[in-house]
Image (cartoon, helix red, strand yellow):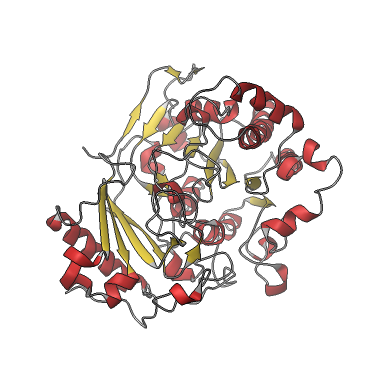
Length: 484
């Protein structure tokens, strides 16, 4: 069955919507540029959306956003952790194009267990990159960044205001998550503003009100849920009481409270758009920088943040734009956060640059049900320590790997076995390749690389051709290997 977009009935997971079908023809003829609000959560997993979980978590505002627009069930981050995913988002390009592969370095873990030399990491998104903010500035947008940046700093001319944002009141430096939290870990700040989600949101709301007479782009990069976990005391108490009578596996009360507080902050932002009369002509996107952490309940997905199994890269993606997106729609087409850049440019009336690797989601918004591409890719030529649930390795979240998803099929090429253990000639025994059918096996439990050799070889050829096109260096290699 091909992935597609479809409309649900009026009642969706307990949320009722009375919206009528979007007036696509009228909207297409309008000259008004939409406002764009991108809400980017930190470590918020695919299963952390309450309407996609087992009932312990509560995210009423996000569930309402989902019911009012389109939910992308096969949405992905550009990488399995923060910095490279954000670099993919801002640049609209895959990791080999910008060289940002990791948070910090690509050699994280016991060096004695490295079989290959990792490709060095680029820590900042280069000033030469034209970001989505710069592209929207050129279309006449007021642009602002709020919250986490993590792909540069003013010292290297790679901070938010160097990369296309007119203002960035809360995220001008390239600090680690631990550093970001040091200033507020005493006193009452955590109970009034956990993870700074409320102060960040209020800053974004003030920008929206000040700029409501012209098109604006607000990038709201909230710090929740990332560790150290923080939540209001009342929220923790709420979920401690709920946990006492909840029998299914669930995250901790503290984790659930973090998600609840994050959702509450998002509700303030959505209410501001409604109160200011901006809701109809504002494209709101909610997504996350990577998959969930082990503190969440990611099953049936395999792995967690940092791994390239589904729990590490599959994320929630919600889109609401009443003038263009029908309420209660679900889209199963695989998409990736690189797609948001060309989507925003096209929504703003521009033509996305040919150099972008992402593809505009506008056809999916309009119900066309497919994109022109056949595959999406990930490339991580390094080592990241810390094992994940049901991972391949007891030491690393991932070793060097390149991944392709094409339709329902997902193939991994692990660089160590590919380069050192015979490559394509010994695929039956060397474990260089894993293949899964995600339609039948979303948990990636059944590797069918040897039982589906024709499909395996098709995806392998696809992946290797992409590696050559993007100059995706395999670990310890000066150039990517060629297909036989």
